[in-house]
Amino acid sequence: MDPLSALRDFTIRGELDKVTQTQNEIRFGSDYTFASSIETPFRSKQGNLYTLQTLVFFIKNNSLKHTEYIQTARAHRIPPVTLPDRKPLFEYLNGKIDSSDQIEFHLPQNPNSLDGPHGETFTNGDEITRNINFNNSVATVDGGKGFENLENIGYMALIRAAERPLKDREQLLECKNSDFYSVLVSSTRREEERQRIESQQRKDGLVAKNRLMGVDERGLGYGGDEGFETTPKPKMLQLKGGKIGEGVPIILVPSAFQTLITIYNVKEFLEDGVYIPTDVKVKNMNGVRPDCVTVQKKFSRDRDQVVKAYEVRDKPSALKAEDWDRVVAVFVLGKEWQFKDWPFKDHVEIFNKIIGFFMRFEDDSVESAKIVKQWNVKIISISKNKRHQDRAAALEVWDRLEEFVRSRSHS
Image (cartoon, rainbow, N blue to C red; front, side):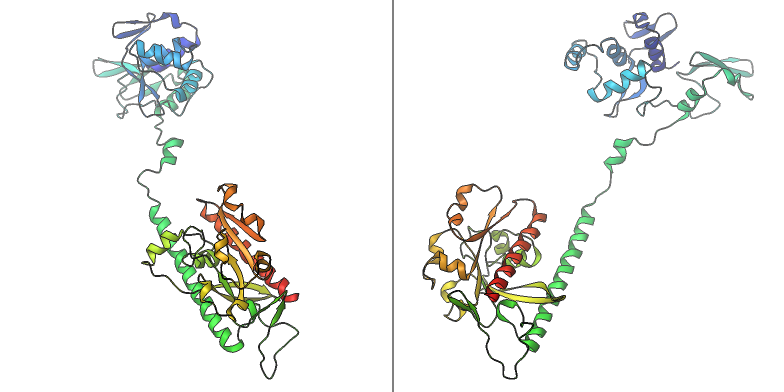
């Protein structure tokens, strides 16, 4: 009998007091004697096989709390049983379970040889006779006759003894020698290529549309009931105290780097729904500062997809008087000096004619938006790390901008 089965047998029968250690041996009454350092078939989840000495010390001290048990084992210089192994080992030794994934019984590779912990071998003339003990049942094996008295053998013990576990659940999840980084890189490149092609198609479609039809005020297209006139006339949609001018609408962004949205990263945010920090974009662009950036957006109108273009600028001082009629939105910095020399009386007039957006990180302090809350602007929050949430924030900007333009157009 192997040492693990012997210890389990004595534990179930309540005869642990008969299991004693003398020098380097552990005796199971007068039945068995094993070396204390012999490895048992019970494998730790860390990969090593527990010795018989470790298991005997554990089962005799299982009533101790784990911390006390660890300290006691160290005091006796005995390797302890780890915490994840305590429950399955205790249940197996006490007979609550009949098997465990951590138990590895091995039969000898030579089928004609059953030497080792499962039995003893001796020679009687030309015939080899072996005694094998499985669950206290004895079978005799002859050299050419095979097993006899198989009805007295525990068949499940024979099957378990012949099993050889290949992998357990933890080993299957480890995925050794597997690298998924190349898959990530490949999928990312395909997505970038798809977005580049779509962006180019949007630009090509916009150019063709502008050449054939022209661009309506603030990217809304021509009105359904107004039709086309033989003699084109510049349209002016009346606002409260102002007008929307003919041409591509303008979105203003701050020129200061301390704001989240700038002339450098506004295109990726509004078109692709991805926030890229300004310093990263500046480095990628080698410090080249664009004077104007064109962003495009598809809107559904009367079951048709309408592509609208917007100019994004960060120098209000460079705008002409007629250009201010085309300004539809502004990303505010939260500072009063941003609106210095603007052709409006106060903030009330500004945000009646122009929709304002204030971008912030969702975990920023309330003080950062203290002044902005006094203005009629929309506060848009994004996460510092969860980039997959950026698209929702960008869509909110577009939805509010379209709603604002539509309401002003009908007023």
